[in-house]
Each structure stands twice: as C-alpha cells, then as structure tokens.
Amino acid sequence: MILVTIGLILIGMILVVLGAETLVRGSSSFALRMKISPLLIGLTIVAYGTSFPELIISTKAALESIGDISIGNIVGSNIFNIALILGFSAIVRPLKVKSQLVRKDTPVMIGVALLFLFFFRDFIISRVEGLLLFCGALIYTGIIIRSATRERLLSKAENHLDEGLPRTLKNIWLDVGFIGVGFVLLFFGANILVDNSVVLAQILGVSQAVIGLTIIAGGTSIPELATSIVAARHNQADIAIANVVGSNIFNILGIIGISSLIHPIQGFDIKMLDFYWMIGTSIILVPFLLTGFRLNRWEGFCLMASYFIYMFLLWPK
Image (tube, rainbow, N blue to C red):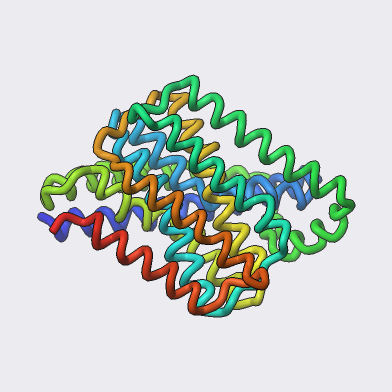
C-alpha cells in the first residue's frame, strides 16, 4: 500500500512539473506572438512560472480545507528554496550577485515572511488578509517593471531575456494547445499529489503539515531547483539567486493571497518553529551575500546543513 501511494505521489509530482513547464512554454510563445515585450514576459510569466505548482497545490488544498498542506507547502518551499537550492547551487559554483538584489529584494523577502507570520498569528489566513497579500504581489511586480524601465534597462534586458525565453511555436493553435495541456496536467497532477499525500500521512502516522512541509514542498520546488542549478553552472548568479528570492516573495504574496481569497486557509498543525526557520534562513542569507556580494561554497554548505537540521527536528522520531 505504501509503495503504491509513494508511486502515485511521484507521478503527481511529475505531472505538476510537466504541467508548469508546458503552461509556461505555451504562454510565453503566445505572448511573444502578440508582440508583448520579452522583459514583461520574463518578469511575469517566466519568473512566476516556477511557482505554478505551489499555486495549484495550495489552492486545491485550501478548497478541500486541508490548510496544513496549503500553508506547509509554502513555508516548506521557501525553506527548501533558500537552504537547499541556493546552498547546492553555491556548492556547484560560488554565486556572485549584484548589490541591488541584496539591498532591495532580499529585505522585501524578509518583510513579506514577517507579514505572513503576523497574518497567521491566529493560524488562519482570511480573505481580507489574502486580498492584502495579493495586492502586494501586484504592487511588487509593477515596481519591478517600472524600475527596469526607469533605469533604461529595457533594451538590454529584452536582449538578455530573449535569449533565455522559449521561441514561438509553429502556430497560435499550438500555443493554445500547450496552455490547455499545461492546465490539464497541473489539475490532475495536483489531485493525485494532494490526495495521496493525505493517505501517506495517515499510513505513516504523521500530520498533514509535515507532509506539506517536506514531500510536497520539495516536489513543487523542482522547477526552482532546476532553474537555479542550470543558472549556476552557466555562471548566471543573478538568475540563480533572483529566481529563489522572487519565488519566495511570490509564494507568499501571490499564492497564499490567491488561495485564501478563494477559500480562507486554516493550518492548526503548522508550528511557529516552521515560520521561525523560514524567516531565519531568509535573514541569514543577507550577511552571507553582503560578504563581497558573493555566496561562497562554505556558506552553501551551511545553508544545506540548516535544511537537514530542520528536517531532523521536523520529522517525528
């Protein structure tokens, strides 16, 4: 029984990841065909595309009143993104980053995490709080686009992003087909993943929160993991780090915002330790990056070690 459940969870993860990739591919191709700026596509569709799995999973969990999975998915993903993904990426190749990311975006990530903790103080994210978070996502995205344009980086950014964006498909019907298939894969993958994760929690005798913080969080973070490792190997440190920082911000503002707007989220089994670890890993990233604006291998080892310590403390003995 447990092997079948684990196998179905793996199938669900694969479907969710393939769905996200297919959806981003079709959406990017359609946007390019409609003459939308590659800068705008890169800052929206592609940048947030890696968070589609978290969005689908958290929304489904919220609708089914499985708030522990919905909240745990986001908290666990944010910890996974910084501690494991950035840690491993830095070990692959030390990451040098621009000061703007450290001085502006990273503090925003910390501030958003603290706001999330404040809203969740009663173990509930209401629709009003969700609306505030979602508005924050819209404002933050608008500020990024406006800042890039104001600093006259549009032409340079478009050239850079144009190289990394998928090319247009053969015709618009393929665009629509990819988008449709992407949503279908995400829908079925999310159903398989969430339903069988609940079963696995029952079999193992652990809380749904633990499953959300570990298995689901790791599975839905696969797109971020792949993006950051590839970027690190190609010496694109800004992409590797910005991918994680941007994803962590959007996970809270966008995903929790949207999910709780659809249905208020309750997560009574989520511990304060989980939030403190998420905020702590966010904060410790700042002095690491400020030392020469570089994330070295030993700092990467420290981040990875913090993740395994967290897993040891989290998983029931």
